[in-house]
Image 1 (cartoon, rainbow, N blue to C red):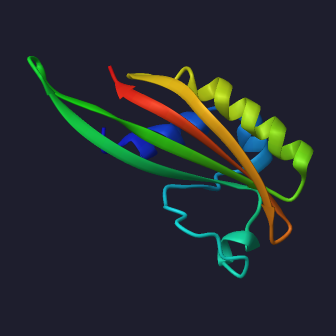
Image 2: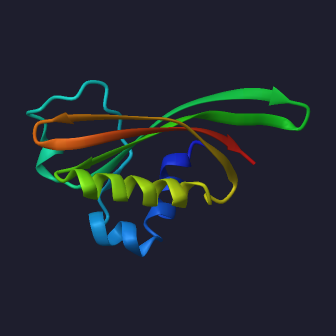
Length: 124
């Protein structure tokens, strides 16, 4: 489960529509506070993946579960919504994981439209 951000990145990059919109600009980092002067806004559009995992002990071993936030940053609102829909469809088919949409929040800062899509993910 520690590979979840890599697994998500690799899975999203198999979608030609997503790649046509962002190339390979999918980054597994954490955005704690959005700074409008950050270099992150110099390279749009892009996707930033954040993870927060926990483990539970089961009779079969450890169970990994957690929350994944997928931050979609673009300079165009329509592109942002289209990209979010593509990401959501693709993540629901992520191999070896059960994925459930939890919430979506949006903001606009530093000439960037940002949608934060939160998922609960359970390792199968």
